[in-house]
Image (tube, rainbow, N blue to C red; front, side):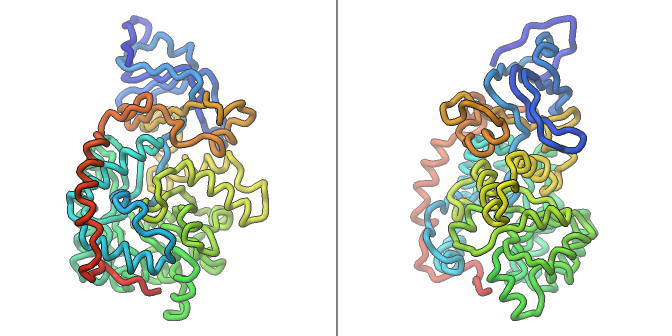
Length: 457
Protein backbone atom coordinates (compact mmCIF):
# COMPACT_ATOMS: atom_id res chain seq x y z
CA UNK A 1 0.00 0.00 0.00
CA UNK A 2 1.44 3.31 -1.01
CA UNK A 3 1.24 6.42 1.11
CA UNK A 4 -0.04 9.55 -0.57
CA UNK A 5 2.05 12.65 -0.13
CA UNK A 6 0.44 15.44 1.90
CA UNK A 7 -0.99 18.45 0.11
CA UNK A 8 -2.57 21.64 1.25
CA UNK A 9 -5.18 21.56 -1.50
CA UNK A 10 -7.51 18.94 -0.05
CA UNK A 11 -8.28 17.47 3.38
CA UNK A 12 -6.98 13.96 3.97
CA UNK A 13 -9.19 10.97 3.25
CA UNK A 14 -8.74 7.49 4.72
CA UNK A 15 -8.68 5.66 1.39
CA UNK A 16 -8.67 6.59 -2.29
CA UNK A 17 -9.32 4.08 -5.07
CA UNK A 18 -8.44 5.64 -8.40
CA UNK A 19 -8.21 4.99 -12.13
CA UNK A 20 -10.97 2.39 -12.18
CA UNK A 21 -14.34 2.06 -13.89
CA UNK A 22 -17.11 2.37 -11.28
CA UNK A 23 -20.51 0.67 -11.41
CA UNK A 24 -23.08 3.34 -10.58
CA UNK A 25 -26.87 3.56 -10.32
CA UNK A 26 -28.81 6.52 -11.69
CA UNK A 27 -31.89 8.09 -10.09
CA UNK A 28 -34.06 5.35 -11.62
CA UNK A 29 -31.68 2.69 -10.28
CA UNK A 30 -30.44 1.76 -13.74
CA UNK A 31 -26.95 0.28 -13.78
CA UNK A 32 -24.26 2.26 -15.56
CA UNK A 33 -20.49 2.67 -15.56
CA UNK A 34 -18.25 5.68 -14.96
CA UNK A 35 -14.80 5.41 -16.51
CA UNK A 36 -11.48 6.77 -15.26
CA UNK A 37 -13.08 7.37 -11.89
CA UNK A 38 -12.07 7.47 -8.26
CA UNK A 39 -13.74 6.67 -4.95
CA UNK A 40 -12.85 8.72 -1.88
CA UNK A 41 -13.52 7.13 1.53
CA UNK A 42 -13.55 8.92 4.87
CA UNK A 43 -14.74 7.57 8.25
CA UNK A 44 -15.79 4.22 6.68
CA UNK A 45 -18.19 5.99 4.31
CA UNK A 46 -17.93 6.86 0.62
CA UNK A 47 -17.44 10.60 0.50
CA UNK A 48 -17.27 10.98 -3.27
CA UNK A 49 -17.32 9.11 -6.56
CA UNK A 50 -15.41 11.48 -8.81
CA UNK A 51 -12.88 11.58 -11.61
CA UNK A 52 -9.39 10.21 -11.24
CA UNK A 53 -8.08 13.68 -12.04
CA UNK A 54 -10.13 15.29 -9.27
CA UNK A 55 -8.85 12.76 -6.71
CA UNK A 56 -5.23 12.95 -7.77
CA UNK A 57 -4.28 15.41 -5.07
CA UNK A 58 -6.51 14.09 -2.27
CA UNK A 59 -4.08 12.83 0.38
CA UNK A 60 -4.78 9.45 1.99
CA UNK A 61 -2.69 6.89 3.89
CA UNK A 62 -4.00 4.18 1.57
CA UNK A 63 -4.19 4.69 -2.20
CA UNK A 64 -5.12 1.90 -4.58
CA UNK A 65 -4.29 2.41 -8.24
CA UNK A 66 -6.86 0.32 -10.09
CA UNK A 67 -6.29 0.75 -13.83
CA UNK A 68 -7.96 -2.06 -15.77
CA UNK A 69 -10.25 -2.86 -12.87
CA UNK A 70 -13.95 -2.31 -12.20
CA UNK A 71 -15.17 -1.13 -8.80
CA UNK A 72 -18.45 -2.72 -7.73
CA UNK A 73 -20.47 -2.62 -4.53
CA UNK A 74 -19.45 -5.64 -2.47
CA UNK A 75 -21.52 -8.71 -3.28
CA UNK A 76 -24.02 -9.96 -0.69
CA UNK A 77 -24.70 -13.63 -0.04
CA UNK A 78 -28.33 -13.36 1.05
CA UNK A 79 -28.71 -16.86 2.47
CA UNK A 80 -26.04 -19.30 3.55
CA UNK A 81 -24.88 -21.53 6.39
CA UNK A 82 -21.24 -20.49 6.51
CA UNK A 83 -19.88 -23.17 8.89
CA UNK A 84 -21.23 -25.89 6.57
CA UNK A 85 -18.16 -25.50 4.38
CA UNK A 86 -16.79 -28.17 6.73
CA UNK A 87 -19.28 -30.58 5.08
CA UNK A 88 -18.45 -29.61 1.50
CA UNK A 89 -18.71 -32.71 -0.71
CA UNK A 90 -19.83 -35.01 2.12
CA UNK A 91 -23.38 -35.64 0.83
CA UNK A 92 -23.34 -35.88 -2.94
CA UNK A 93 -25.84 -37.00 -5.60
CA UNK A 94 -28.71 -37.51 -3.16
CA UNK A 95 -32.34 -36.40 -3.14
CA UNK A 96 -32.97 -33.76 -0.51
CA UNK A 97 -34.66 -36.06 2.04
CA UNK A 98 -31.70 -38.49 2.04
CA UNK A 99 -29.26 -35.59 2.05
CA UNK A 100 -30.83 -34.30 5.27
CA UNK A 101 -31.78 -37.51 7.07
CA UNK A 102 -28.89 -39.79 6.17
CA UNK A 103 -25.95 -37.40 6.19
CA UNK A 104 -26.32 -33.74 7.15
CA UNK A 105 -28.60 -33.87 10.17
CA UNK A 106 -26.77 -36.85 11.73
CA UNK A 107 -23.42 -35.09 11.25
CA UNK A 108 -24.70 -31.82 12.67
CA UNK A 109 -25.33 -33.50 16.03
CA UNK A 110 -21.52 -33.66 16.31
CA UNK A 111 -20.95 -29.94 15.83
CA UNK A 112 -18.94 -28.17 18.49
CA UNK A 113 -18.30 -24.47 18.81
CA UNK A 114 -14.75 -25.07 17.59
CA UNK A 115 -16.02 -26.83 14.44
CA UNK A 116 -18.29 -23.87 13.77
CA UNK A 117 -15.47 -21.38 14.32
CA UNK A 118 -13.18 -23.17 11.88
CA UNK A 119 -15.92 -23.60 9.29
CA UNK A 120 -16.91 -19.95 9.61
CA UNK A 121 -13.28 -18.81 9.21
CA UNK A 122 -12.84 -20.88 6.07
CA UNK A 123 -16.16 -19.64 4.69
CA UNK A 124 -15.31 -16.01 5.38
CA UNK A 125 -11.95 -16.42 3.66
CA UNK A 126 -13.69 -17.91 0.62
CA UNK A 127 -16.24 -15.11 0.53
CA UNK A 128 -13.66 -12.33 0.91
CA UNK A 129 -11.67 -13.82 -1.96
CA UNK A 130 -14.85 -13.98 -4.03
CA UNK A 131 -15.85 -10.37 -3.46
CA UNK A 132 -18.60 -11.03 -0.90
CA UNK A 133 -18.62 -8.27 1.70
CA UNK A 134 -21.81 -9.27 3.57
CA UNK A 135 -23.57 -12.58 4.19
CA UNK A 136 -26.84 -13.64 5.80
CA UNK A 137 -26.28 -16.70 7.95
CA UNK A 138 -28.85 -19.02 9.51
CA UNK A 139 -27.19 -21.66 11.67
CA UNK A 140 -26.10 -22.92 15.10
CA UNK A 141 -23.54 -21.54 17.62
CA UNK A 142 -24.05 -18.09 16.15
CA UNK A 143 -22.11 -16.29 18.87
CA UNK A 144 -19.11 -18.11 17.47
CA UNK A 145 -19.91 -16.97 13.93
CA UNK A 146 -20.35 -13.41 15.20
CA UNK A 147 -16.90 -13.57 16.77
CA UNK A 148 -15.38 -14.67 13.45
CA UNK A 149 -17.15 -11.82 11.65
CA UNK A 150 -15.77 -9.34 14.16
CA UNK A 151 -12.30 -10.80 13.68
CA UNK A 152 -12.18 -10.92 9.89
CA UNK A 153 -13.90 -7.61 9.10
CA UNK A 154 -16.88 -8.79 7.04
CA UNK A 155 -20.44 -7.54 7.38
CA UNK A 156 -23.09 -10.12 8.35
CA UNK A 157 -26.79 -10.58 9.03
CA UNK A 158 -26.96 -13.40 11.58
CA UNK A 159 -29.77 -15.55 12.93
CA UNK A 160 -29.63 -18.43 15.42
CA UNK A 161 -31.66 -21.24 13.88
CA UNK A 162 -34.22 -23.16 15.94
CA UNK A 163 -36.76 -25.98 15.61
CA UNK A 164 -39.97 -26.53 17.58
CA UNK A 165 -38.51 -29.86 18.70
CA UNK A 166 -36.23 -27.83 20.98
CA UNK A 167 -39.23 -26.51 22.87
CA UNK A 168 -39.62 -22.92 23.97
CA UNK A 169 -35.91 -22.58 24.74
CA UNK A 170 -34.99 -22.70 21.03
CA UNK A 171 -37.14 -19.72 20.20
CA UNK A 172 -36.00 -17.83 23.29
CA UNK A 173 -32.33 -18.47 22.53
CA UNK A 174 -32.79 -17.19 18.97
CA UNK A 175 -34.36 -13.98 20.29
CA UNK A 176 -31.74 -13.54 23.00
CA UNK A 177 -28.93 -13.84 20.46
CA UNK A 178 -30.59 -11.40 18.08
CA UNK A 179 -31.12 -8.77 20.75
CA UNK A 180 -27.66 -9.11 22.28
CA UNK A 181 -25.64 -9.14 19.08
CA UNK A 182 -27.41 -6.62 16.86
CA UNK A 183 -25.11 -3.72 16.13
CA UNK A 184 -22.00 -5.68 17.15
CA UNK A 185 -18.65 -5.53 15.36
CA UNK A 186 -18.83 -1.72 15.08
CA UNK A 187 -22.28 -1.99 13.51
CA UNK A 188 -21.29 -4.54 10.86
CA UNK A 189 -23.52 -7.22 12.43
CA UNK A 190 -27.27 -7.05 12.09
CA UNK A 191 -29.44 -9.85 13.42
CA UNK A 192 -32.68 -11.71 12.79
CA UNK A 193 -34.93 -14.27 14.42
CA UNK A 194 -34.34 -17.56 12.62
CA UNK A 195 -37.08 -20.23 12.77
CA UNK A 196 -35.90 -23.03 10.50
CA UNK A 197 -38.98 -23.61 8.30
CA UNK A 198 -42.75 -24.10 8.48
CA UNK A 199 -42.27 -27.87 8.32
CA UNK A 200 -39.98 -27.92 11.39
CA UNK A 201 -41.47 -25.01 13.36
CA UNK A 202 -45.14 -25.26 14.32
CA UNK A 203 -47.73 -22.53 13.94
CA UNK A 204 -47.60 -21.60 17.63
CA UNK A 205 -43.86 -20.97 17.46
CA UNK A 206 -44.18 -19.08 14.17
CA UNK A 207 -46.87 -16.87 15.69
CA UNK A 208 -44.74 -16.27 18.78
CA UNK A 209 -41.79 -15.41 16.52
CA UNK A 210 -43.87 -12.84 14.65
CA UNK A 211 -44.89 -11.28 17.97
CA UNK A 212 -41.26 -11.12 19.12
CA UNK A 213 -40.25 -9.54 15.82
CA UNK A 214 -42.85 -6.80 16.13
CA UNK A 215 -42.13 -6.22 19.81
CA UNK A 216 -38.38 -5.81 19.37
CA UNK A 217 -38.15 -4.49 15.82
CA UNK A 218 -36.33 -7.58 14.61
CA UNK A 219 -36.48 -9.08 11.11
CA UNK A 220 -37.05 -12.80 10.49
CA UNK A 221 -35.01 -15.16 8.28
CA UNK A 222 -36.70 -18.47 7.39
CA UNK A 223 -36.68 -21.26 4.80
CA UNK A 224 -40.12 -21.47 3.17
CA UNK A 225 -41.60 -23.05 0.04
CA UNK A 226 -38.07 -24.27 -0.65
CA UNK A 227 -39.31 -26.68 -3.31
CA UNK A 228 -42.56 -27.70 -4.95
CA UNK A 229 -42.71 -30.93 -2.93
CA UNK A 230 -42.85 -28.97 0.32
CA UNK A 231 -45.69 -26.86 -1.05
CA UNK A 232 -47.64 -29.91 -2.22
CA UNK A 233 -47.20 -31.62 1.16
CA UNK A 234 -48.27 -28.49 3.02
CA UNK A 235 -51.41 -28.26 0.91
CA UNK A 236 -52.21 -31.95 1.47
CA UNK A 237 -51.67 -31.80 5.24
CA UNK A 238 -52.88 -28.32 6.12
CA UNK A 239 -54.81 -27.02 3.13
CA UNK A 240 -52.34 -24.09 2.93
CA UNK A 241 -49.15 -23.35 1.08
CA UNK A 242 -46.06 -22.54 3.17
CA UNK A 243 -46.48 -18.87 2.21
CA UNK A 244 -50.10 -19.00 3.42
CA UNK A 245 -48.81 -20.47 6.69
CA UNK A 246 -46.47 -17.49 7.04
CA UNK A 247 -49.42 -15.18 6.42
CA UNK A 248 -51.70 -16.97 8.90
CA UNK A 249 -49.08 -16.83 11.66
CA UNK A 250 -48.34 -13.13 11.13
CA UNK A 251 -44.84 -13.48 9.70
CA UNK A 252 -45.79 -11.67 6.49
CA UNK A 253 -46.38 -8.61 8.67
CA UNK A 254 -42.73 -8.62 9.75
CA UNK A 255 -39.55 -7.78 7.84
CA UNK A 256 -39.07 -11.23 6.36
CA UNK A 257 -36.31 -12.89 4.34
CA UNK A 258 -37.52 -16.12 2.70
CA UNK A 259 -34.86 -18.58 1.58
CA UNK A 260 -35.37 -20.25 -1.81
CA UNK A 261 -39.09 -19.99 -2.61
CA UNK A 262 -38.95 -22.33 -5.61
CA UNK A 263 -42.29 -23.72 -4.41
CA UNK A 264 -44.04 -20.34 -4.44
CA UNK A 265 -47.31 -20.63 -6.37
CA UNK A 266 -49.29 -18.03 -8.27
CA UNK A 267 -51.86 -18.00 -5.43
CA UNK A 268 -49.09 -16.87 -3.06
CA UNK A 269 -48.18 -13.75 -5.03
CA UNK A 270 -51.05 -11.49 -3.85
CA UNK A 271 -50.08 -12.26 -0.23
CA UNK A 272 -46.45 -11.40 -0.90
CA UNK A 273 -47.46 -8.22 -2.72
CA UNK A 274 -49.45 -6.81 0.19
CA UNK A 275 -47.27 -7.81 3.14
CA UNK A 276 -47.19 -5.57 6.15
CA UNK A 277 -43.40 -5.63 6.37
CA UNK A 278 -40.39 -5.75 4.07
CA UNK A 279 -40.53 -9.16 2.42
CA UNK A 280 -37.71 -10.47 0.23
CA UNK A 281 -36.64 -13.81 -1.25
CA UNK A 282 -33.11 -15.21 -1.59
CA UNK A 283 -32.41 -17.45 -4.58
CA UNK A 284 -29.56 -20.01 -4.69
CA UNK A 285 -29.93 -21.68 -8.10
CA UNK A 286 -26.96 -24.06 -8.10
CA UNK A 287 -28.42 -26.13 -5.28
CA UNK A 288 -31.77 -26.44 -7.04
CA UNK A 289 -30.01 -27.90 -10.06
CA UNK A 290 -28.06 -30.36 -7.90
CA UNK A 291 -31.22 -31.57 -6.17
CA UNK A 292 -33.00 -31.80 -9.54
CA UNK A 293 -35.88 -29.66 -8.34
CA UNK A 294 -38.38 -29.12 -11.17
CA UNK A 295 -38.89 -25.40 -10.47
CA UNK A 296 -36.77 -22.40 -9.57
CA UNK A 297 -37.42 -19.14 -7.73
CA UNK A 298 -40.06 -17.22 -9.76
CA UNK A 299 -37.94 -14.09 -9.98
CA UNK A 300 -39.99 -12.35 -12.67
CA UNK A 301 -43.30 -12.84 -10.87
CA UNK A 302 -41.80 -11.75 -7.55
CA UNK A 303 -40.33 -8.61 -9.08
CA UNK A 304 -43.72 -7.80 -10.63
CA UNK A 305 -45.19 -8.12 -7.12
CA UNK A 306 -42.59 -5.70 -5.78
CA UNK A 307 -40.63 -8.35 -3.86
CA UNK A 308 -36.82 -7.93 -3.98
CA UNK A 309 -34.92 -11.08 -4.90
CA UNK A 310 -31.37 -11.30 -3.58
CA UNK A 311 -28.64 -13.70 -4.68
CA UNK A 312 -27.42 -16.51 -2.47
CA UNK A 313 -25.42 -19.70 -2.42
CA UNK A 314 -27.02 -21.64 0.45
CA UNK A 315 -24.48 -23.69 2.41
CA UNK A 316 -21.48 -25.31 0.75
CA UNK A 317 -22.74 -28.73 1.87
CA UNK A 318 -25.38 -28.51 -0.86
CA UNK A 319 -23.92 -25.92 -3.23
CA UNK A 320 -20.24 -26.88 -2.83
CA UNK A 321 -19.16 -23.25 -3.02
CA UNK A 322 -19.94 -19.78 -1.73
CA UNK A 323 -19.52 -18.22 -5.17
CA UNK A 324 -22.05 -15.41 -5.63
CA UNK A 325 -20.62 -14.68 -9.11
CA UNK A 326 -21.81 -18.12 -10.16
CA UNK A 327 -25.19 -17.49 -8.53
CA UNK A 328 -25.51 -14.28 -10.53
CA UNK A 329 -24.75 -15.95 -13.87
CA UNK A 330 -26.94 -18.98 -13.14
CA UNK A 331 -29.84 -16.80 -12.06
CA UNK A 332 -29.70 -14.95 -15.36
CA UNK A 333 -29.39 -18.13 -17.45
CA UNK A 334 -32.02 -20.17 -15.61
CA UNK A 335 -34.50 -17.30 -15.69
CA UNK A 336 -34.06 -17.01 -19.46
CA UNK A 337 -34.69 -20.73 -19.85
CA UNK A 338 -37.63 -20.86 -17.43
CA UNK A 339 -39.35 -17.82 -18.92
CA UNK A 340 -38.50 -18.79 -22.51
CA UNK A 341 -37.33 -15.23 -23.04
CA UNK A 342 -33.71 -14.32 -23.86
CA UNK A 343 -34.48 -10.67 -23.04
CA UNK A 344 -35.01 -11.61 -19.37
CA UNK A 345 -32.92 -11.63 -17.09
CA UNK A 346 -30.43 -9.24 -18.72
CA UNK A 347 -26.91 -8.71 -17.46
CA UNK A 348 -27.80 -5.29 -16.10
CA UNK A 349 -30.83 -6.74 -14.33
CA UNK A 350 -28.61 -9.46 -12.86
CA UNK A 351 -26.20 -6.80 -11.56
CA UNK A 352 -29.16 -5.00 -9.99
CA UNK A 353 -30.11 -8.21 -8.16
CA UNK A 354 -26.51 -8.66 -7.05
CA UNK A 355 -26.25 -5.13 -5.68
CA UNK A 356 -29.26 -3.05 -4.62
CA UNK A 357 -31.81 -5.87 -4.46
CA UNK A 358 -29.52 -8.07 -2.40
CA UNK A 359 -28.86 -5.18 -0.03
CA UNK A 360 -32.60 -4.67 0.40
CA UNK A 361 -33.16 -8.36 0.93
CA UNK A 362 -31.00 -8.32 4.06
CA UNK A 363 -32.38 -5.01 5.30
CA UNK A 364 -29.35 -2.93 4.36
CA UNK A 365 -30.72 -1.10 1.34
CA UNK A 366 -30.03 2.27 2.94
CA UNK A 367 -26.40 1.47 3.76
CA UNK A 368 -24.83 -0.71 1.07
CA UNK A 369 -25.58 -2.01 -2.40
CA UNK A 370 -24.39 1.00 -4.39
CA UNK A 371 -21.26 3.13 -4.67
CA UNK A 372 -22.51 6.59 -3.83
CA UNK A 373 -21.79 9.32 -1.29
CA UNK A 374 -23.10 8.43 2.15
CA UNK A 375 -23.00 4.66 1.58
CA UNK A 376 -20.74 2.42 3.64
CA UNK A 377 -17.46 1.77 1.87
CA UNK A 378 -18.01 -1.87 0.88
CA UNK A 379 -16.11 -2.03 -2.40
CA UNK A 380 -14.60 -4.75 -4.56
CA UNK A 381 -12.17 -4.36 -7.43
CA UNK A 382 -12.45 -6.79 -10.33
CA UNK A 383 -9.58 -7.31 -12.76
CA UNK A 384 -10.81 -7.62 -16.35
CA UNK A 385 -7.41 -7.86 -18.04
CA UNK A 386 -7.44 -11.67 -18.29
CA UNK A 387 -7.96 -13.42 -21.64
CA UNK A 388 -11.35 -14.78 -20.56
CA UNK A 389 -12.70 -11.24 -20.06
CA UNK A 390 -11.30 -9.65 -23.24
CA UNK A 391 -12.32 -7.95 -25.42
CA UNK A 392 -15.07 -6.03 -23.63
CA UNK A 393 -17.99 -5.11 -25.88
CA UNK A 394 -20.62 -5.01 -23.14
CA UNK A 395 -19.17 -4.42 -19.68
CA UNK A 396 -22.27 -5.68 -17.85
CA UNK A 397 -22.25 -8.93 -19.84
CA UNK A 398 -18.52 -9.35 -19.21
CA UNK A 399 -19.03 -8.99 -15.46
CA UNK A 400 -21.99 -11.41 -15.28
CA UNK A 401 -21.06 -14.05 -17.84
CA UNK A 402 -17.26 -13.91 -18.21
CA UNK A 403 -15.78 -12.69 -14.94
CA UNK A 404 -15.16 -15.14 -12.12
CA UNK A 405 -14.74 -14.93 -8.38
CA UNK A 406 -10.98 -15.33 -8.88
CA UNK A 407 -10.93 -12.05 -10.81
CA UNK A 408 -11.63 -10.11 -7.61
CA UNK A 409 -8.35 -8.43 -6.71
CA UNK A 410 -9.31 -6.36 -3.69
CA UNK A 411 -12.10 -6.50 -1.11
CA UNK A 412 -12.92 -3.58 1.17
CA UNK A 413 -15.53 -3.51 3.96
CA UNK A 414 -16.37 -0.37 5.91
CA UNK A 415 -13.31 1.24 4.40
CA UNK A 416 -10.96 -1.49 5.66
CA UNK A 417 -8.99 -3.50 3.11
CA UNK A 418 -9.56 -7.21 3.82
CA UNK A 419 -7.82 -8.48 0.68
CA UNK A 420 -5.28 -6.63 -1.47
CA UNK A 421 -4.05 -8.08 -4.77
CA UNK A 422 -5.50 -11.49 -3.78
CA UNK A 423 -3.70 -11.53 -0.42
CA UNK A 424 -5.97 -12.10 2.55
CA UNK A 425 -5.10 -9.68 5.34
CA UNK A 426 -7.35 -10.78 8.22
CA UNK A 427 -7.50 -14.60 8.15
CA UNK A 428 -4.99 -17.46 8.21
CA UNK A 429 -6.38 -20.07 5.82
CA UNK A 430 -3.53 -22.55 6.13
CA UNK A 431 -3.84 -22.90 9.90
CA UNK A 432 -7.65 -23.07 9.69
CA UNK A 433 -7.55 -25.89 7.14
CA UNK A 434 -4.92 -27.78 9.14
CA UNK A 435 -6.99 -27.80 12.32
CA UNK A 436 -10.30 -28.46 10.56
CA UNK A 437 -8.82 -31.42 8.67
CA UNK A 438 -7.69 -32.96 11.95
CA UNK A 439 -11.21 -32.65 13.37
CA UNK A 440 -13.06 -34.14 10.39
CA UNK A 441 -13.16 -37.83 11.50
CA UNK A 442 -15.01 -36.91 14.69
CA UNK A 443 -17.18 -34.29 13.01
CA UNK A 444 -18.38 -36.56 10.19
CA UNK A 445 -19.12 -39.70 12.26
CA UNK A 446 -22.67 -41.02 11.72
CA UNK A 447 -22.70 -44.33 13.58
CA UNK A 448 -24.38 -42.84 16.67
CA UNK A 449 -27.86 -42.87 15.10
CA UNK A 450 -28.76 -39.30 16.13
CA UNK A 451 -30.26 -36.50 14.01
CA UNK A 452 -30.86 -32.88 14.83
CA UNK A 453 -34.24 -33.14 13.08
CA UNK A 454 -36.32 -35.32 10.73
CA UNK A 455 -37.00 -34.22 7.15
CA UNK A 456 -40.54 -35.35 6.46
CA UNK A 457 -42.45 -33.16 4.03
